[in-house]
Image (cartoon, rainbow, N blue to C red):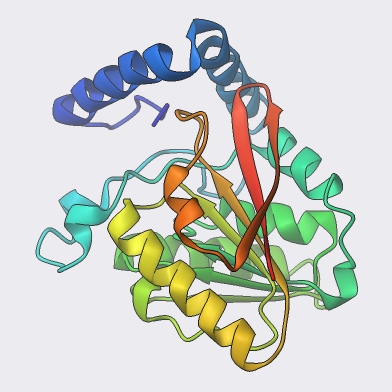
Length: 238
C-alpha cells in the first residue's frame, strides 16, 4: 500500500485507492497523511539513488501461477528514516543479530539494516523478478563493504527453514494471515528446538493491532512504534 504511481497499472491504482480509504477508516486521516508525507520524503531523498528499490511491483502480475501468489501483497519499499528509528529503539547487539526480512522484495530493508550496522542479513523472496533485483542491489552494496554478509533466498517464505542463528525477523505486510501464521509457527518451532529467543517486527500501517498474533502463546507483545504513520509492532519470542 501507498506505492509509487510510476509504471503501475490502473487496477493497482484502484486497489491503492481502496486500501487508502480503508486505512483512513481504521487508523485515521492524520496517520494516513503522515504516511504519505514520509513516502514523499523518502522518494525525494532517494531520487538519485543508485539502487532500484523505490518503484513498486505486484508479484501477481509476474508469477500469476505460483500457488502462494493469491496470498501476496504488492511490494512497497520500507521507508528509511522510520525503519532506522525503529532499529535504534530495540537496543540490539549488532554483532550477534541475524536479520531476516520475510518478503524482502527489492531488498530495501536489507540495505538499511546493513547501514545500521547489522553484519549478517538474509532476505526471503518468492517472486523471481523481485529477488533478482534484490541480488543486484545487494551486490552493489557489498562492493563497498566486505564486512557484511547479505544473502538473498528465492523461496516461498512458508517453507524457509529457520536457522538457529536467526533472531530478528521482519515482515512489512508481505502477505495475508494464511502464510504469516505458517512462517511464525516455523520460527517458534526452530527457536524452541534450540532454546533460543528472538524478536519479530511486524509492520502494517493500516491497522491498530495484528490480532492474529494473539494465537501464539510463545509470543509476548512488547510495544508499537509509530514513526510518521509507519507502524511497527514488536513481539518477543519466548
